[in-house]
Image (tube, rainbow, N blue to C red; front, top):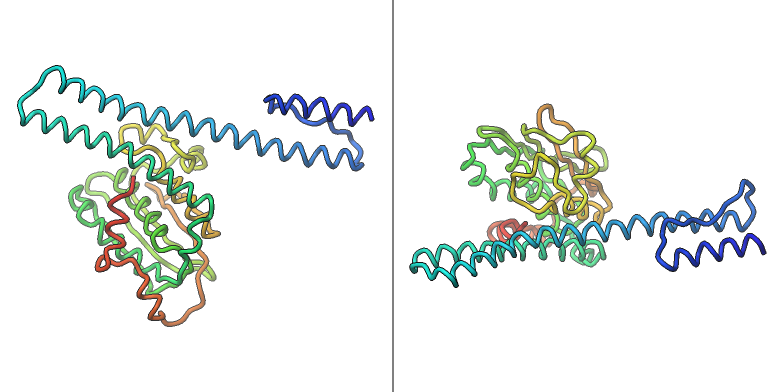
Length: 300
Protein backbone atom coordinates (compact mmCIF):
# COMPACT_ATOMS: atom_id res chain seq x y z
CA UNK A 1 0.00 0.00 0.00
CA UNK A 2 2.96 2.32 0.61
CA UNK A 3 4.10 1.79 -2.98
CA UNK A 4 0.57 2.26 -4.33
CA UNK A 5 0.29 5.52 -2.38
CA UNK A 6 3.62 6.71 -3.85
CA UNK A 7 2.35 5.92 -7.36
CA UNK A 8 -0.88 7.79 -6.61
CA UNK A 9 1.01 10.91 -5.51
CA UNK A 10 3.16 10.88 -8.65
CA UNK A 11 0.15 10.41 -10.94
CA UNK A 12 -1.61 13.28 -9.15
CA UNK A 13 1.34 15.59 -9.91
CA UNK A 14 1.27 14.51 -13.57
CA UNK A 15 -2.49 15.18 -13.77
CA UNK A 16 -1.82 18.73 -12.58
CA UNK A 17 0.54 19.32 -15.52
CA UNK A 18 3.99 18.35 -14.28
CA UNK A 19 5.00 15.89 -17.01
CA UNK A 20 8.54 15.52 -15.68
CA UNK A 21 7.38 13.28 -12.81
CA UNK A 22 7.89 9.53 -13.19
CA UNK A 23 6.59 6.61 -11.17
CA UNK A 24 9.07 5.20 -8.65
CA UNK A 25 10.67 1.88 -9.59
CA UNK A 26 12.69 -0.70 -7.68
CA UNK A 27 15.26 -3.31 -8.60
CA UNK A 28 12.84 -6.25 -8.41
CA UNK A 29 10.55 -7.24 -11.27
CA UNK A 30 7.22 -7.68 -9.52
CA UNK A 31 3.91 -6.61 -11.06
CA UNK A 32 3.94 -3.06 -9.64
CA UNK A 33 7.47 -2.45 -10.88
CA UNK A 34 6.64 -3.73 -14.37
CA UNK A 35 3.53 -1.54 -14.46
CA UNK A 36 5.53 1.50 -13.31
CA UNK A 37 8.15 1.01 -16.04
CA UNK A 38 5.42 0.66 -18.68
CA UNK A 39 3.67 3.83 -17.52
CA UNK A 40 6.99 5.71 -17.39
CA UNK A 41 7.64 4.75 -21.02
CA UNK A 42 4.19 6.03 -21.94
CA UNK A 43 4.87 9.29 -20.06
CA UNK A 44 8.15 9.75 -21.95
CA UNK A 45 6.27 9.50 -25.24
CA UNK A 46 3.49 11.83 -24.07
CA UNK A 47 6.03 14.43 -22.94
CA UNK A 48 7.80 14.20 -26.30
CA UNK A 49 4.52 14.68 -28.19
CA UNK A 50 3.43 17.60 -26.02
CA UNK A 51 6.76 19.37 -26.56
CA UNK A 52 6.46 18.64 -30.29
CA UNK A 53 3.00 20.21 -30.47
CA UNK A 54 4.21 23.20 -28.46
CA UNK A 55 7.22 23.72 -30.74
CA UNK A 56 5.09 23.40 -33.88
CA UNK A 57 2.58 25.92 -32.50
CA UNK A 58 5.39 28.39 -31.80
CA UNK A 59 6.84 27.84 -35.27
CA UNK A 60 3.46 28.36 -36.95
CA UNK A 61 2.97 31.62 -35.04
CA UNK A 62 6.47 32.78 -36.01
CA UNK A 63 6.14 31.87 -39.69
CA UNK A 64 2.67 33.39 -40.01
CA UNK A 65 3.68 36.61 -38.28
CA UNK A 66 6.12 37.70 -41.02
CA UNK A 67 3.79 37.53 -44.07
CA UNK A 68 0.85 38.93 -42.07
CA UNK A 69 2.99 41.83 -40.79
CA UNK A 70 4.16 42.54 -44.34
CA UNK A 71 0.56 42.38 -45.59
CA UNK A 72 -0.63 44.83 -42.93
CA UNK A 73 2.26 47.19 -43.69
CA UNK A 74 1.45 47.19 -47.41
CA UNK A 75 -2.23 47.87 -46.84
CA UNK A 76 -1.51 50.59 -44.27
CA UNK A 77 0.91 52.27 -46.68
CA UNK A 78 -1.70 52.17 -49.44
CA UNK A 79 -4.27 53.71 -47.12
CA UNK A 80 -2.00 56.55 -45.95
CA UNK A 81 -0.04 57.44 -49.10
CA UNK A 82 -2.70 56.81 -51.76
CA UNK A 83 -0.09 56.23 -54.50
CA UNK A 84 -0.63 56.21 -58.24
CA UNK A 85 -2.56 53.35 -59.82
CA UNK A 86 0.61 51.66 -61.08
CA UNK A 87 2.27 51.72 -57.65
CA UNK A 88 -0.96 50.61 -55.99
CA UNK A 89 -1.24 47.60 -58.28
CA UNK A 90 2.39 46.66 -57.53
CA UNK A 91 1.63 46.76 -53.78
CA UNK A 92 -1.53 44.70 -54.34
CA UNK A 93 0.55 42.07 -56.15
CA UNK A 94 2.89 41.99 -53.15
CA UNK A 95 -0.08 41.65 -50.79
CA UNK A 96 -1.40 38.72 -52.83
CA UNK A 97 2.03 37.07 -52.58
CA UNK A 98 1.95 37.51 -48.79
CA UNK A 99 -1.49 35.87 -48.62
CA UNK A 100 -0.25 33.03 -50.86
CA UNK A 101 2.59 32.35 -48.42
CA UNK A 102 0.09 31.99 -45.57
CA UNK A 103 -2.15 29.72 -47.66
CA UNK A 104 0.82 27.51 -48.61
CA UNK A 105 1.67 27.04 -44.93
CA UNK A 106 -1.88 25.94 -44.11
CA UNK A 107 -2.12 23.73 -47.21
CA UNK A 108 1.09 21.94 -46.21
CA UNK A 109 -0.14 21.49 -42.63
CA UNK A 110 -3.47 20.11 -43.84
CA UNK A 111 -1.68 17.62 -46.10
CA UNK A 112 0.51 16.55 -43.20
CA UNK A 113 -2.55 16.13 -40.96
CA UNK A 114 -4.25 13.94 -43.59
CA UNK A 115 -1.13 11.82 -43.96
CA UNK A 116 -0.65 11.46 -40.21
CA UNK A 117 -4.27 10.32 -39.87
CA UNK A 118 -3.79 7.72 -42.61
CA UNK A 119 -6.67 9.21 -44.59
CA UNK A 120 -4.82 8.91 -47.91
CA UNK A 121 -4.40 5.11 -47.85
CA UNK A 122 -7.61 4.80 -49.84
CA UNK A 123 -5.75 6.35 -52.79
CA UNK A 124 -3.20 3.53 -53.04
CA UNK A 125 -2.87 1.99 -56.51
CA UNK A 126 -0.24 0.08 -58.43
CA UNK A 127 1.93 2.65 -60.22
CA UNK A 128 5.17 2.97 -62.16
CA UNK A 129 7.54 5.20 -60.17
CA UNK A 130 9.86 5.53 -63.18
CA UNK A 131 7.07 7.19 -65.15
CA UNK A 132 6.14 9.36 -62.16
CA UNK A 133 9.76 10.52 -61.70
CA UNK A 134 10.18 11.20 -65.43
CA UNK A 135 7.11 13.47 -65.38
CA UNK A 136 8.46 15.34 -62.34
CA UNK A 137 11.82 15.91 -64.02
CA UNK A 138 10.12 17.15 -67.18
CA UNK A 139 8.05 19.60 -65.11
CA UNK A 140 11.13 21.06 -63.37
CA UNK A 141 13.36 21.30 -66.45
CA UNK A 142 12.42 24.95 -67.21
CA UNK A 143 13.24 25.99 -63.62
CA UNK A 144 16.58 24.17 -63.85
CA UNK A 145 17.40 25.88 -67.16
CA UNK A 146 16.77 29.31 -65.62
CA UNK A 147 19.48 28.55 -63.05
CA UNK A 148 21.74 26.83 -65.64
CA UNK A 149 21.48 23.56 -63.72
CA UNK A 150 21.86 20.24 -65.51
CA UNK A 151 18.79 18.20 -64.44
CA UNK A 152 18.97 14.58 -65.59
CA UNK A 153 16.90 11.44 -65.14
CA UNK A 154 18.12 7.85 -64.97
CA UNK A 155 16.06 4.66 -64.83
CA UNK A 156 16.34 1.01 -65.84
CA UNK A 157 12.74 0.86 -67.00
CA UNK A 158 9.30 0.46 -65.41
CA UNK A 159 9.24 -0.22 -61.68
CA UNK A 160 5.95 -0.92 -59.92
CA UNK A 161 5.08 0.04 -56.35
CA UNK A 162 1.83 0.35 -54.43
CA UNK A 163 1.13 3.89 -53.28
CA UNK A 164 -0.71 7.17 -53.63
CA UNK A 165 0.47 8.74 -56.92
CA UNK A 166 -0.43 12.29 -55.85
CA UNK A 167 1.42 12.08 -52.53
CA UNK A 168 4.45 10.42 -54.11
CA UNK A 169 4.50 13.16 -56.77
CA UNK A 170 4.39 15.78 -54.01
CA UNK A 171 7.21 14.09 -52.10
CA UNK A 172 9.42 13.80 -55.18
CA UNK A 173 8.74 17.39 -56.21
CA UNK A 174 9.75 18.58 -52.74
CA UNK A 175 13.06 16.73 -53.06
CA UNK A 176 13.72 18.21 -56.52
CA UNK A 177 12.69 21.68 -55.34
CA UNK A 178 15.12 21.40 -52.40
CA UNK A 179 17.92 20.36 -54.75
CA UNK A 180 17.19 23.34 -57.03
CA UNK A 181 17.39 25.70 -54.04
CA UNK A 182 20.82 24.54 -52.93
CA UNK A 183 22.54 23.39 -56.12
CA UNK A 184 25.00 26.07 -57.32
CA UNK A 185 24.78 27.97 -60.58
CA UNK A 186 25.80 25.62 -63.42
CA UNK A 187 25.45 22.73 -60.96
CA UNK A 188 23.90 19.32 -61.54
CA UNK A 189 20.95 17.34 -60.21
CA UNK A 190 20.22 13.68 -60.96
CA UNK A 191 16.90 11.96 -60.33
CA UNK A 192 17.31 8.18 -60.44
CA UNK A 193 14.94 5.23 -60.05
CA UNK A 194 16.42 1.79 -59.47
CA UNK A 195 15.51 -1.52 -57.89
CA UNK A 196 17.51 -3.09 -55.07
CA UNK A 197 16.20 -6.53 -54.21
CA UNK A 198 12.64 -6.10 -52.96
CA UNK A 199 12.84 -2.30 -52.75
CA UNK A 200 12.47 0.57 -55.19
CA UNK A 201 14.74 3.57 -54.60
CA UNK A 202 13.92 7.05 -55.86
CA UNK A 203 16.94 9.28 -55.34
CA UNK A 204 17.54 13.00 -55.92
CA UNK A 205 21.25 13.95 -55.89
CA UNK A 206 22.78 17.42 -56.11
CA UNK A 207 26.26 18.95 -55.78
CA UNK A 208 25.27 21.71 -53.37
CA UNK A 209 26.52 22.29 -49.80
CA UNK A 210 24.79 19.18 -48.44
CA UNK A 211 23.60 18.72 -44.85
CA UNK A 212 25.80 18.35 -41.80
CA UNK A 213 25.61 14.92 -40.20
CA UNK A 214 24.31 16.40 -36.92
CA UNK A 215 21.46 18.16 -38.74
CA UNK A 216 20.18 15.24 -40.80
CA UNK A 217 17.85 14.06 -38.04
CA UNK A 218 16.57 17.61 -37.48
CA UNK A 219 15.80 18.71 -41.06
CA UNK A 220 12.83 16.33 -41.27
CA UNK A 221 11.23 18.01 -38.24
CA UNK A 222 8.41 20.40 -39.05
CA UNK A 223 9.43 24.05 -39.43
CA UNK A 224 13.11 23.29 -38.78
CA UNK A 225 15.42 25.47 -40.87
CA UNK A 226 19.17 25.14 -40.56
CA UNK A 227 21.70 27.92 -41.01
CA UNK A 228 22.21 27.05 -44.68
CA UNK A 229 18.48 27.57 -45.42
CA UNK A 230 18.01 30.95 -43.73
CA UNK A 231 18.27 32.92 -46.96
CA UNK A 232 16.17 30.56 -49.08
CA UNK A 233 12.38 30.61 -49.53
CA UNK A 234 10.25 28.11 -47.64
CA UNK A 235 8.92 27.44 -44.15
CA UNK A 236 10.66 24.17 -43.27
CA UNK A 237 7.86 21.76 -44.19
CA UNK A 238 9.21 20.24 -47.41
CA UNK A 239 11.25 17.36 -45.98
CA UNK A 240 8.66 16.88 -43.21
CA UNK A 241 6.07 16.13 -45.86
CA UNK A 242 8.43 13.71 -47.63
CA UNK A 243 9.08 11.94 -44.32
CA UNK A 244 5.33 11.71 -43.62
CA UNK A 245 4.64 10.31 -47.11
CA UNK A 246 7.40 7.73 -46.61
CA UNK A 247 5.94 6.72 -43.26
CA UNK A 248 2.44 6.38 -44.75
CA UNK A 249 3.86 4.00 -47.38
CA UNK A 250 5.69 1.95 -44.76
CA UNK A 251 8.98 3.12 -46.26
CA UNK A 252 11.79 5.47 -45.29
CA UNK A 253 13.63 8.61 -46.33
CA UNK A 254 17.43 8.49 -46.14
CA UNK A 255 19.68 11.56 -46.42
CA UNK A 256 23.12 10.52 -47.63
CA UNK A 257 26.30 12.41 -48.49
CA UNK A 258 26.87 12.86 -52.22
CA UNK A 259 30.43 14.19 -51.96
CA UNK A 260 29.80 17.07 -52.48
CA UNK A 261 26.09 17.66 -51.97
CA UNK A 262 23.14 15.66 -50.74
CA UNK A 263 21.55 12.44 -51.97
CA UNK A 264 17.97 12.09 -50.71
CA UNK A 265 16.63 8.56 -51.19
CA UNK A 266 12.98 7.52 -50.87
CA UNK A 267 12.86 3.75 -50.36
CA UNK A 268 9.60 1.94 -51.24
CA UNK A 269 8.56 -1.69 -51.36
CA UNK A 270 8.66 -2.89 -54.97
CA UNK A 271 5.89 -5.02 -56.41
CA UNK A 272 6.47 -8.25 -58.27
CA UNK A 273 7.83 -7.83 -61.78
CA UNK A 274 5.31 -7.93 -64.56
CA UNK A 275 3.73 -5.94 -67.32
CA UNK A 276 1.87 -2.75 -66.48
CA UNK A 277 -1.86 -3.26 -66.26
CA UNK A 278 -4.16 -1.02 -68.25
CA UNK A 279 -5.95 0.27 -65.17
CA UNK A 280 -2.58 1.06 -63.58
CA UNK A 281 -1.56 3.16 -66.57
CA UNK A 282 -4.81 5.09 -66.36
CA UNK A 283 -4.03 6.16 -62.80
CA UNK A 284 -0.57 7.56 -63.58
CA UNK A 285 -0.15 11.32 -62.98
CA UNK A 286 0.95 12.50 -66.43
CA UNK A 287 1.07 16.04 -67.84
CA UNK A 288 -1.69 15.08 -70.26
CA UNK A 289 -4.27 14.53 -67.55
CA UNK A 290 -3.07 17.50 -65.47
CA UNK A 291 -2.34 15.65 -62.23
CA UNK A 292 1.41 16.11 -62.03
CA UNK A 293 1.73 19.78 -63.08
CA UNK A 294 -1.11 21.00 -60.86
CA UNK A 295 0.19 19.01 -57.91
CA UNK A 296 3.79 20.14 -58.33
CA UNK A 297 2.98 23.79 -58.96
CA UNK A 298 0.98 24.15 -55.74
CA UNK A 299 3.65 22.88 -53.34
CA UNK A 300 5.03 25.08 -50.53
